[in-house]
Length: 463
Image (cartoon, rainbow, N blue to C red; front, side, top):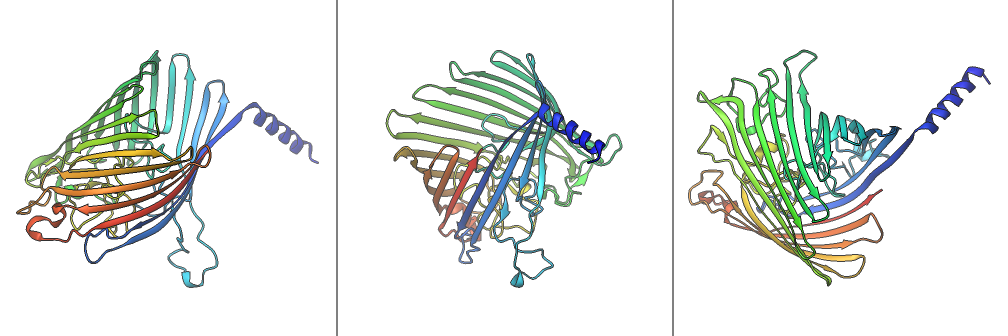
Protein backbone atom coordinates (compact mmCIF):
# COMPACT_ATOMS: atom_id res chain seq x y z
CA UNK A 1 0.00 0.00 0.00
CA UNK A 2 1.21 3.51 -0.79
CA UNK A 3 3.11 5.01 2.17
CA UNK A 4 1.42 8.39 1.76
CA UNK A 5 -2.00 6.71 1.89
CA UNK A 6 -1.06 4.85 5.07
CA UNK A 7 0.23 8.09 6.63
CA UNK A 8 -3.00 9.89 5.69
CA UNK A 9 -5.15 7.18 7.28
CA UNK A 10 -3.08 7.29 10.47
CA UNK A 11 -3.32 11.09 10.71
CA UNK A 12 -7.06 11.09 10.02
CA UNK A 13 -7.62 8.40 12.64
CA UNK A 14 -5.61 10.27 15.25
CA UNK A 15 -7.50 13.50 14.54
CA UNK A 16 -10.85 11.72 14.81
CA UNK A 17 -9.84 10.26 18.16
CA UNK A 18 -8.82 13.71 19.41
CA UNK A 19 -12.39 14.99 19.20
CA UNK A 20 -15.86 13.55 19.61
CA UNK A 21 -19.34 14.17 18.23
CA UNK A 22 -22.49 14.05 20.34
CA UNK A 23 -25.68 13.29 18.41
CA UNK A 24 -29.19 14.24 19.43
CA UNK A 25 -32.36 14.38 17.40
CA UNK A 26 -35.96 13.41 17.01
CA UNK A 27 -38.33 11.46 14.79
CA UNK A 28 -42.01 12.23 14.26
CA UNK A 29 -44.79 10.62 12.24
CA UNK A 30 -48.41 11.77 12.24
CA UNK A 31 -51.75 11.62 10.45
CA UNK A 32 -54.41 14.35 10.40
CA UNK A 33 -58.03 14.55 9.28
CA UNK A 34 -60.03 17.80 9.38
CA UNK A 35 -63.63 17.29 8.30
CA UNK A 36 -64.94 20.75 7.40
CA UNK A 37 -62.32 23.55 7.47
CA UNK A 38 -64.55 25.63 5.19
CA UNK A 39 -67.36 25.49 7.79
CA UNK A 40 -69.67 25.17 4.76
CA UNK A 41 -71.45 22.51 2.71
CA UNK A 42 -68.41 22.32 0.44
CA UNK A 43 -66.31 20.79 3.20
CA UNK A 44 -62.84 21.10 1.60
CA UNK A 45 -61.87 18.19 3.86
CA UNK A 46 -58.19 17.64 4.67
CA UNK A 47 -56.49 14.26 5.23
CA UNK A 48 -52.71 13.94 5.21
CA UNK A 49 -49.76 12.28 6.91
CA UNK A 50 -46.33 13.70 7.76
CA UNK A 51 -42.95 12.05 8.27
CA UNK A 52 -39.89 13.85 9.67
CA UNK A 53 -36.45 13.26 11.19
CA UNK A 54 -33.87 15.74 12.43
CA UNK A 55 -30.31 15.12 13.59
CA UNK A 56 -28.24 17.55 15.66
CA UNK A 57 -24.50 16.86 15.78
CA UNK A 58 -22.37 18.71 18.33
CA UNK A 59 -18.68 18.55 17.52
CA UNK A 60 -16.55 18.89 20.65
CA UNK A 61 -13.68 20.61 18.86
CA UNK A 62 -11.75 21.59 21.98
CA UNK A 63 -12.25 22.28 25.65
CA UNK A 64 -15.33 24.53 25.81
CA UNK A 65 -15.50 24.94 22.02
CA UNK A 66 -18.41 23.30 20.21
CA UNK A 67 -19.63 23.37 16.62
CA UNK A 68 -23.36 22.64 16.44
CA UNK A 69 -25.44 21.81 13.39
CA UNK A 70 -28.83 20.44 12.47
CA UNK A 71 -29.90 18.27 9.53
CA UNK A 72 -33.59 18.13 8.60
CA UNK A 73 -34.40 14.87 6.81
CA UNK A 74 -37.69 14.44 4.92
CA UNK A 75 -38.36 18.17 5.10
CA UNK A 76 -41.36 19.67 3.33
CA UNK A 77 -40.77 20.75 -0.27
CA UNK A 78 -43.57 23.34 -0.56
CA UNK A 79 -42.15 26.85 -0.87
CA UNK A 80 -44.33 28.07 2.03
CA UNK A 81 -43.13 25.31 4.37
CA UNK A 82 -39.54 24.56 3.34
CA UNK A 83 -38.09 26.53 6.27
CA UNK A 84 -39.94 24.51 8.90
CA UNK A 85 -39.95 21.14 10.60
CA UNK A 86 -43.38 20.25 9.27
CA UNK A 87 -42.07 17.14 7.53
CA UNK A 88 -42.66 15.50 4.17
CA UNK A 89 -46.18 14.57 3.12
CA UNK A 90 -46.68 10.81 3.16
CA UNK A 91 -47.32 9.73 -0.43
CA UNK A 92 -45.50 12.66 -1.98
CA UNK A 93 -45.20 10.69 -5.21
CA UNK A 94 -42.69 11.30 -7.96
CA UNK A 95 -41.69 14.64 -9.39
CA UNK A 96 -44.45 16.69 -11.07
CA UNK A 97 -43.06 15.76 -14.51
CA UNK A 98 -43.39 11.99 -13.97
CA UNK A 99 -46.63 9.93 -13.92
CA UNK A 100 -47.45 8.62 -10.46
CA UNK A 101 -49.80 5.98 -11.89
CA UNK A 102 -46.82 3.88 -13.00
CA UNK A 103 -44.39 4.69 -10.18
CA UNK A 104 -42.56 1.92 -8.34
CA UNK A 105 -40.74 4.12 -5.86
CA UNK A 106 -41.16 7.38 -4.00
CA UNK A 107 -39.36 10.58 -4.87
CA UNK A 108 -36.18 11.05 -2.83
CA UNK A 109 -36.49 13.62 -0.06
CA UNK A 110 -34.35 16.70 0.40
CA UNK A 111 -31.80 17.10 3.19
CA UNK A 112 -31.71 20.62 4.59
CA UNK A 113 -29.25 22.19 7.02
CA UNK A 114 -31.21 24.58 9.24
CA UNK A 115 -28.58 25.35 11.91
CA UNK A 116 -24.80 25.76 12.02
CA UNK A 117 -23.11 27.77 14.73
CA UNK A 118 -20.05 28.04 16.95
CA UNK A 119 -20.53 27.89 20.71
CA UNK A 120 -17.67 28.83 23.03
CA UNK A 121 -18.20 28.41 26.79
CA UNK A 122 -16.09 29.61 29.68
CA UNK A 123 -16.49 30.82 33.25
CA UNK A 124 -17.85 34.26 32.33
CA UNK A 125 -20.47 33.23 29.80
CA UNK A 126 -21.03 31.83 26.34
CA UNK A 127 -20.41 33.00 22.77
CA UNK A 128 -22.73 32.05 19.91
CA UNK A 129 -21.83 32.80 16.28
CA UNK A 130 -23.66 31.47 13.24
CA UNK A 131 -27.19 30.33 12.41
CA UNK A 132 -28.64 29.43 15.80
CA UNK A 133 -32.10 28.80 17.29
CA UNK A 134 -33.78 31.61 19.17
CA UNK A 135 -36.41 31.36 21.91
CA UNK A 136 -37.74 33.47 24.74
CA UNK A 137 -40.27 33.09 27.53
CA UNK A 138 -43.36 31.07 26.65
CA UNK A 139 -42.57 31.21 22.95
CA UNK A 140 -45.46 33.40 21.80
CA UNK A 141 -43.08 35.46 19.63
CA UNK A 142 -39.70 33.70 19.56
CA UNK A 143 -40.02 29.92 19.50
CA UNK A 144 -37.27 27.45 18.60
CA UNK A 145 -39.71 24.54 18.24
CA UNK A 146 -38.24 22.33 20.97
CA UNK A 147 -41.48 20.43 21.60
CA UNK A 148 -41.43 16.94 20.01
CA UNK A 149 -44.55 17.78 17.98
CA UNK A 150 -43.59 21.35 16.98
CA UNK A 151 -43.86 22.06 13.25
CA UNK A 152 -42.00 25.37 13.13
CA UNK A 153 -38.79 26.94 14.40
CA UNK A 154 -37.09 30.33 14.71
CA UNK A 155 -33.43 30.76 13.75
CA UNK A 156 -31.17 33.74 13.24
CA UNK A 157 -27.75 34.43 11.70
CA UNK A 158 -26.25 36.01 14.78
CA UNK A 159 -23.27 36.89 16.88
CA UNK A 160 -24.12 37.06 20.57
CA UNK A 161 -22.47 36.77 23.94
CA UNK A 162 -24.34 35.64 27.04
CA UNK A 163 -22.96 37.05 30.29
CA UNK A 164 -23.95 34.95 33.32
CA UNK A 165 -23.76 36.12 36.95
CA UNK A 166 -25.42 33.74 39.42
CA UNK A 167 -29.13 33.68 38.50
CA UNK A 168 -28.93 36.61 36.07
CA UNK A 169 -27.90 36.60 32.42
CA UNK A 170 -27.58 39.34 29.83
CA UNK A 171 -27.09 38.69 26.11
CA UNK A 172 -26.56 41.31 23.38
CA UNK A 173 -27.15 39.87 19.90
CA UNK A 174 -26.38 41.30 16.49
CA UNK A 175 -28.18 39.43 13.71
CA UNK A 176 -28.27 39.73 9.94
CA UNK A 177 -31.78 38.99 8.66
CA UNK A 178 -30.96 39.36 4.98
CA UNK A 179 -28.43 40.81 2.58
CA UNK A 180 -29.42 41.58 -1.00
CA UNK A 181 -25.91 41.12 -2.43
CA UNK A 182 -22.25 41.56 -1.49
CA UNK A 183 -22.57 45.32 -1.35
CA UNK A 184 -22.85 47.50 1.74
CA UNK A 185 -26.09 49.16 2.81
CA UNK A 186 -28.43 46.53 1.34
CA UNK A 187 -29.13 44.65 4.56
CA UNK A 188 -31.89 43.94 7.05
CA UNK A 189 -30.49 43.56 10.57
CA UNK A 190 -31.60 42.97 14.16
CA UNK A 191 -30.18 44.39 17.36
CA UNK A 192 -31.37 42.28 20.28
CA UNK A 193 -30.87 42.55 24.03
CA UNK A 194 -32.02 39.71 26.25
CA UNK A 195 -32.15 39.95 30.04
CA UNK A 196 -33.18 36.87 32.04
CA UNK A 197 -33.51 35.94 35.69
CA UNK A 198 -33.83 32.26 36.66
CA UNK A 199 -33.85 31.28 40.33
CA UNK A 200 -34.46 27.54 40.48
CA UNK A 201 -34.31 27.51 44.28
CA UNK A 202 -37.52 29.51 44.62
CA UNK A 203 -39.02 28.69 41.18
CA UNK A 204 -38.96 32.27 39.89
CA UNK A 205 -38.25 33.41 36.33
CA UNK A 206 -38.34 36.78 34.59
CA UNK A 207 -37.05 38.21 31.35
CA UNK A 208 -36.92 41.07 28.86
CA UNK A 209 -36.43 40.66 25.10
CA UNK A 210 -35.82 43.86 23.14
CA UNK A 211 -35.53 43.56 19.36
CA UNK A 212 -34.94 46.42 16.92
CA UNK A 213 -35.12 45.60 13.21
CA UNK A 214 -33.68 48.07 10.69
CA UNK A 215 -33.42 47.80 6.93
CA UNK A 216 -32.41 50.08 4.09
CA UNK A 217 -34.77 51.15 1.32
CA UNK A 218 -33.07 48.67 -1.03
CA UNK A 219 -33.66 45.77 1.38
CA UNK A 220 -37.29 46.65 2.18
CA UNK A 221 -38.90 43.84 0.18
CA UNK A 222 -42.30 43.76 1.93
CA UNK A 223 -43.98 44.10 -1.49
CA UNK A 224 -41.22 43.08 -3.92
CA UNK A 225 -40.58 39.62 -2.45
CA UNK A 226 -41.96 36.58 -4.34
CA UNK A 227 -44.65 36.38 -1.64
CA UNK A 228 -45.43 40.02 -0.62
CA UNK A 229 -47.22 40.98 2.58
CA UNK A 230 -50.99 41.19 1.89
CA UNK A 231 -51.77 44.11 4.27
CA UNK A 232 -49.43 46.39 2.29
CA UNK A 233 -51.02 45.75 -1.10
CA UNK A 234 -51.26 48.98 -3.09
CA UNK A 235 -48.86 50.89 -0.84
CA UNK A 236 -45.87 52.91 -2.12
CA UNK A 237 -42.30 52.38 -0.90
CA UNK A 238 -40.87 55.48 0.77
CA UNK A 239 -38.12 54.46 3.22
CA UNK A 240 -36.46 51.60 5.06
CA UNK A 241 -38.04 49.17 7.51
CA UNK A 242 -37.83 50.17 11.20
CA UNK A 243 -39.71 48.18 13.87
CA UNK A 244 -39.32 47.42 17.54
CA UNK A 245 -40.57 44.37 19.46
CA UNK A 246 -40.50 44.23 23.27
CA UNK A 247 -41.38 41.05 25.18
CA UNK A 248 -41.75 40.78 28.95
CA UNK A 249 -41.92 37.43 30.74
CA UNK A 250 -42.60 36.35 34.31
CA UNK A 251 -43.01 32.92 35.85
CA UNK A 252 -43.45 31.57 39.37
CA UNK A 253 -43.70 28.01 40.58
CA UNK A 254 -44.84 26.63 43.90
CA UNK A 255 -45.55 23.06 44.88
CA UNK A 256 -49.29 23.41 44.31
CA UNK A 257 -49.45 26.24 41.77
CA UNK A 258 -47.53 27.35 38.68
CA UNK A 259 -48.01 30.56 36.73
CA UNK A 260 -46.45 32.06 33.57
CA UNK A 261 -47.16 35.35 31.79
CA UNK A 262 -45.71 36.92 28.65
CA UNK A 263 -46.59 40.21 26.96
CA UNK A 264 -45.36 41.49 23.60
CA UNK A 265 -45.55 44.90 21.92
CA UNK A 266 -44.76 45.59 18.24
CA UNK A 267 -44.36 49.17 17.00
CA UNK A 268 -42.55 51.00 14.22
CA UNK A 269 -42.58 52.00 10.55
CA UNK A 270 -43.02 49.76 7.52
CA UNK A 271 -41.43 52.29 5.18
CA UNK A 272 -44.55 52.34 2.99
CA UNK A 273 -47.16 55.03 2.32
CA UNK A 274 -50.85 54.86 1.58
CA UNK A 275 -52.60 58.08 0.66
CA UNK A 276 -49.30 59.85 1.33
CA UNK A 277 -49.39 58.80 5.01
CA UNK A 278 -46.86 56.33 6.53
CA UNK A 279 -48.07 52.84 7.45
CA UNK A 280 -47.05 51.93 11.00
CA UNK A 281 -47.21 48.93 13.34
CA UNK A 282 -48.99 49.25 16.69
CA UNK A 283 -49.97 45.83 18.05
CA UNK A 284 -49.76 43.79 21.23
CA UNK A 285 -50.32 40.34 22.71
CA UNK A 286 -50.58 38.80 26.18
CA UNK A 287 -50.57 35.11 27.12
CA UNK A 288 -50.88 33.46 30.53
CA UNK A 289 -50.75 29.85 31.70
CA UNK A 290 -51.72 28.35 35.06
CA UNK A 291 -51.19 24.84 36.36
CA UNK A 292 -52.56 23.29 39.56
CA UNK A 293 -50.90 19.92 40.17
CA UNK A 294 -52.34 17.73 42.92
CA UNK A 295 -51.05 14.87 45.02
CA UNK A 296 -53.46 12.53 43.26
CA UNK A 297 -53.94 11.67 39.62
CA UNK A 298 -55.72 14.87 38.59
CA UNK A 299 -54.04 17.98 37.18
CA UNK A 300 -55.87 21.22 36.38
CA UNK A 301 -54.71 24.03 34.13
CA UNK A 302 -55.80 27.00 32.07
CA UNK A 303 -54.54 29.20 29.27
CA UNK A 304 -55.66 32.76 28.72
CA UNK A 305 -54.56 35.22 26.08
CA UNK A 306 -55.33 38.20 23.91
CA UNK A 307 -53.93 39.33 20.57
CA UNK A 308 -54.83 42.65 18.97
CA UNK A 309 -56.52 42.60 15.56
CA UNK A 310 -56.08 44.75 12.49
CA UNK A 311 -58.86 47.33 12.21
CA UNK A 312 -59.92 47.83 8.56
CA UNK A 313 -61.00 51.41 9.32
CA UNK A 314 -57.38 52.45 10.05
CA UNK A 315 -55.44 51.71 6.82
CA UNK A 316 -52.33 53.53 8.03
CA UNK A 317 -51.95 51.42 11.17
CA UNK A 318 -51.37 47.67 11.35
CA UNK A 319 -52.77 46.65 14.75
CA UNK A 320 -52.83 42.90 14.10
CA UNK A 321 -50.55 40.72 16.20
CA UNK A 322 -49.84 37.08 15.31
CA UNK A 323 -48.54 34.58 17.86
CA UNK A 324 -45.77 32.19 16.84
CA UNK A 325 -47.35 29.20 15.08
CA UNK A 326 -45.77 26.79 17.58
CA UNK A 327 -47.86 28.22 20.42
CA UNK A 328 -51.02 26.10 20.41
CA UNK A 329 -54.16 26.46 22.49
CA UNK A 330 -56.57 24.20 20.60
CA UNK A 331 -56.42 21.46 18.01
CA UNK A 332 -58.58 23.26 15.42
CA UNK A 333 -58.92 26.91 16.46
CA UNK A 334 -55.81 29.01 15.79
CA UNK A 335 -54.11 25.90 14.36
CA UNK A 336 -55.87 25.13 11.07
CA UNK A 337 -57.26 27.77 8.73
CA UNK A 338 -61.05 27.85 8.73
CA UNK A 339 -63.93 29.84 7.32
CA UNK A 340 -64.33 32.05 4.25
CA UNK A 341 -62.65 35.22 5.58
CA UNK A 342 -59.45 36.19 7.38
CA UNK A 343 -61.28 36.76 10.67
CA UNK A 344 -58.09 36.33 12.74
CA UNK A 345 -56.24 38.95 10.62
CA UNK A 346 -53.31 36.55 10.23
CA UNK A 347 -53.04 37.00 6.46
CA UNK A 348 -49.64 38.64 6.97
CA UNK A 349 -48.30 35.15 7.79
CA UNK A 350 -50.08 33.49 4.82
CA UNK A 351 -48.17 34.96 1.92
CA UNK A 352 -48.67 32.06 -0.54
CA UNK A 353 -51.92 32.71 -2.40
CA UNK A 354 -52.10 29.10 -3.68
CA UNK A 355 -52.85 27.79 -0.19
CA UNK A 356 -56.29 27.96 1.39
CA UNK A 357 -58.38 26.27 4.09
CA UNK A 358 -58.61 23.05 2.09
CA UNK A 359 -54.99 22.48 1.03
CA UNK A 360 -52.84 24.03 3.77
CA UNK A 361 -51.15 22.46 6.77
CA UNK A 362 -51.67 23.60 10.37
CA UNK A 363 -50.18 27.02 9.61
CA UNK A 364 -52.73 29.21 11.39
CA UNK A 365 -51.78 31.35 14.38
CA UNK A 366 -53.47 33.20 17.22
CA UNK A 367 -54.58 36.70 16.25
CA UNK A 368 -57.42 39.22 16.76
CA UNK A 369 -58.86 37.21 19.63
CA UNK A 370 -59.28 36.89 23.35
CA UNK A 371 -59.41 33.26 24.43
CA UNK A 372 -59.82 31.12 27.53
CA UNK A 373 -58.87 27.43 27.61
CA UNK A 374 -59.29 25.52 30.91
CA UNK A 375 -58.07 21.92 30.92
CA UNK A 376 -58.00 18.84 33.11
CA UNK A 377 -55.66 15.86 32.86
CA UNK A 378 -56.09 12.47 34.49
CA UNK A 379 -53.24 9.99 34.95
CA UNK A 380 -54.78 6.62 34.13
CA UNK A 381 -51.57 4.79 35.00
CA UNK A 382 -47.83 5.31 34.69
CA UNK A 383 -47.98 5.28 30.90
CA UNK A 384 -51.40 6.70 29.98
CA UNK A 385 -52.80 10.22 30.47
CA UNK A 386 -56.20 11.52 29.41
CA UNK A 387 -56.59 15.26 28.84
CA UNK A 388 -59.63 17.38 28.06
CA UNK A 389 -59.55 21.06 27.04
CA UNK A 390 -62.45 23.48 26.53
CA UNK A 391 -61.63 26.54 24.43
CA UNK A 392 -63.71 29.69 23.96
CA UNK A 393 -62.72 32.61 21.74
CA UNK A 394 -64.06 36.05 20.90
CA UNK A 395 -62.73 38.41 18.25
CA UNK A 396 -61.23 41.74 19.25
CA UNK A 397 -62.25 43.80 16.20
CA UNK A 398 -64.59 43.45 13.23
CA UNK A 399 -62.02 42.54 10.53
CA UNK A 400 -64.38 42.85 7.55
CA UNK A 401 -66.30 45.98 8.59
CA UNK A 402 -69.50 44.05 7.93
CA UNK A 403 -72.85 45.22 9.30
CA UNK A 404 -74.48 43.24 12.16
CA UNK A 405 -71.19 41.50 12.87
CA UNK A 406 -70.86 39.23 15.91
CA UNK A 407 -67.51 38.66 17.66
CA UNK A 408 -68.43 35.22 19.00
CA UNK A 409 -65.81 32.83 17.57
CA UNK A 410 -67.28 29.72 19.16
CA UNK A 411 -66.38 26.89 21.52
CA UNK A 412 -64.12 23.90 20.96
CA UNK A 413 -63.79 20.69 22.95
CA UNK A 414 -60.56 18.70 22.62
CA UNK A 415 -59.92 15.21 23.98
CA UNK A 416 -56.43 13.72 24.03
CA UNK A 417 -55.10 10.27 24.91
CA UNK A 418 -51.37 10.33 25.66
CA UNK A 419 -49.39 7.09 25.77
CA UNK A 420 -45.76 7.00 26.97
CA UNK A 421 -44.56 3.38 26.62
CA UNK A 422 -41.00 4.27 27.58
CA UNK A 423 -38.70 7.22 28.18
CA UNK A 424 -38.51 9.77 25.33
CA UNK A 425 -41.30 8.03 23.40
CA UNK A 426 -44.78 9.57 23.19
CA UNK A 427 -47.92 8.74 21.19
CA UNK A 428 -50.76 11.26 21.18
CA UNK A 429 -54.30 10.82 19.84
CA UNK A 430 -56.52 13.92 19.66
CA UNK A 431 -60.15 14.52 18.79
CA UNK A 432 -61.40 18.09 18.42
CA UNK A 433 -64.95 19.36 17.89
CA UNK A 434 -65.65 23.02 17.08
CA UNK A 435 -69.05 24.65 17.48
CA UNK A 436 -68.50 27.81 15.40
CA UNK A 437 -69.93 31.08 16.68
CA UNK A 438 -71.74 33.79 14.75
CA UNK A 439 -68.49 35.57 13.84
CA UNK A 440 -67.90 33.11 10.99
CA UNK A 441 -71.18 34.23 9.35
CA UNK A 442 -69.70 37.72 8.80
CA UNK A 443 -72.84 39.65 9.69
CA UNK A 444 -75.08 40.45 6.73
CA UNK A 445 -72.87 38.30 4.47
CA UNK A 446 -74.64 35.36 6.11
CA UNK A 447 -71.85 32.85 5.47
CA UNK A 448 -72.08 29.29 6.72
CA UNK A 449 -70.77 28.26 10.15
CA UNK A 450 -71.35 24.53 10.28
CA UNK A 451 -69.81 22.19 12.86
CA UNK A 452 -66.22 21.09 12.26
CA UNK A 453 -64.29 18.23 13.82
CA UNK A 454 -60.88 16.68 13.38
CA UNK A 455 -58.66 13.82 14.46
CA UNK A 456 -54.90 13.49 14.69
CA UNK A 457 -52.63 10.66 15.77
CA UNK A 458 -48.93 11.34 16.13
CA UNK A 459 -45.88 9.68 17.63
CA UNK A 460 -42.50 11.17 18.47
CA UNK A 461 -39.16 9.76 19.60
CA UNK A 462 -36.37 11.98 20.91
CA UNK A 463 -32.82 10.85 21.52
